[in-house]
Length: 161
Image (cartoon, rainbow, N blue to C red; front, side, top):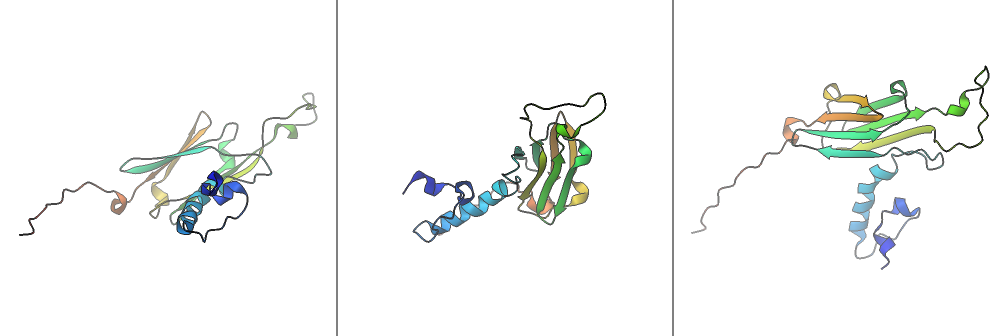
């Protein structure tokens, strides 16, 4: 078995046989990685959103790097247990004409649309979600519902006698 057999199929760009002895594991890995690969955006436009997901006992926080993107061009949508962050980064080469007309000789800064979706293990209350942007980083804070907040509970051990 090759090392690449353990990578998510979305990363390989091809389907891998999931019927072998580790077929169930392969399917679980692919399902888990779906949110990370398919929600990033089209690979043809070259614009990717880097994000982190962190958790405390009371909330989940998603941060996404969105440098150069205006807040009016960002949408955060919630449907059930799924959150989607999407938007568009406008290209500088759209500026033409006037005294500041530019002729670009090289363009390395990417532009285009992006879409990032994540599925959480509970339904999200959209009225309690908070989002803010600071220094080009979007922070979305999602409070966990009371039933999702787990607290440690000591279990009494009884004698089997």
